[in-house]
Amino acid sequence: MLFGMVVLATLLSYILPAGLFERELVDGRQRVIPGTFHTIPQTSVGLLDMFVAFSKGFKAASDIMWVVFASGIMFGILDKTKMIENVIGTIVNRMGVNNKNTIVILATFIFGMCGVAVGYENNIALVPIAAVLALAIGGDLILAAGISVAAITVGFGLSPINPYTIGTGHKIAEMPLFSGVEYRSILCFIGLALLAFYNLRYFKNLQSDPEHSLGVGLDTEGFTLTKRIEEYSLNSKDYLVLAVFLGGMSIMLYGVFAHHWYINEISAVFLMISIVAGLVSRMSSTEISKTVLKSIALVAPGAFMVGFATTIKVILEMGNVSDTIAFYLSNMLTSFPTYISAILMSFSQCIMNIMIPSGSGQALATLPIMIPVGELAGLTRQCSIQAFQIGDGITNLFNPTLGGLIAMLSMCRVPFDKWLRFIFPVATYLLLISWVFLLIMVMINWQ
Image 1 (cartoon, rainbow, N blue to C red):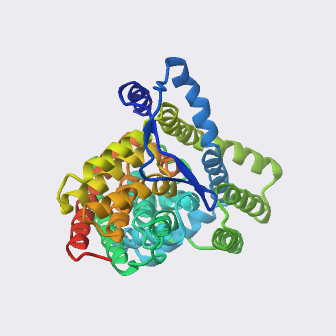
Image 2 (image 1 turned 90 degrees about the horizontal axis):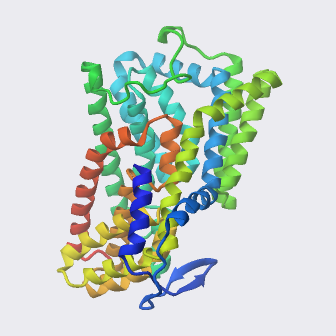
Image 3 (image 1 turned 30 degrees about the vertical axis):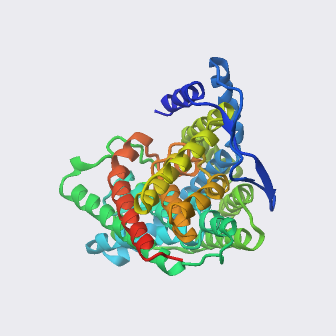
């Protein structure tokens, strides 16, 4: 599937004219200058260049690939200590087997709030915990991805305080930072509630008929509980390892918010947690080494797919067609009525998100164009930013070029094709509801 998209991106470099916007440096980031689009000589990507792009794609994705390895190592060590299994087993035991539906709903909202408040790639290491939880209550790995990957993506994508999309958008539009938080919070809550209902319905279908499972045949080694729920309890070693994990995650969050840590610093914290957890649980150096190698082997396919997906973006950049698509999409909007323009603006951001999967990068590349175009079409700046957030945030659920999504799916061992079968219906519902919400914003002339 991804290779087909690589070929398609290559073909686009022959079909579409190459073009560029001029850019200016603002606070260390390149931002598009509206009205500066111009065509350049065709830069078609040849057959050899297409395959050379793979090495460039893997190089560009190296930090996300490494955080996959680091989080995989951390989970492998924590799993070896049995702390995660004992904690999940004890929680399910104390809540009772009759409250499984409640667990699904609560877990969806908890992971969703992690996306709202913590970020995206920062939550990669939490995904395997959802895998253990989902299997413990009788679910499958698809359900695990639904309550973790999907919830984190929806929470992050529709977050009213997302610094990468809303924050960057407000800065470009010269508006108060995170203004309109009340309206966006309502939409974010509705999105997570719909996802929780969808996850619960899948879980109920799974309970009534296991043949409904999309996760048949997926590798669950290391995720399943090894004894009956009634037998689980926590010992002193579990509490000690849990304290190391929670302490390390707290340090990571402090660094993210106070010192603007990102992927490389997060990876370093994951490795430090791994080493300390192994030592306090009295694992030998040989045990730690073997666990690290086994963990890397399990997450290596997912890390490989992250680099593969990034190659698509690299080819589009080599062909210089991303700016061309943004230019023609923006010009198209002014020829439609205001309400239709709002939906088309959001839809155009869905398309741009495939080519520029970074939220802040997409904002810097498209909003300087879209905001003035939106005003010509009768849209307020707040509505234009919301259209951008919907297009960027919802399509993150099925964006094959988004390294963080591929990385999280790899952490719960869910193939992308099975993920699409599960997530596409609810993603469609989320888009429709978000567009209705957007139309209401346009109707009230939301400022």
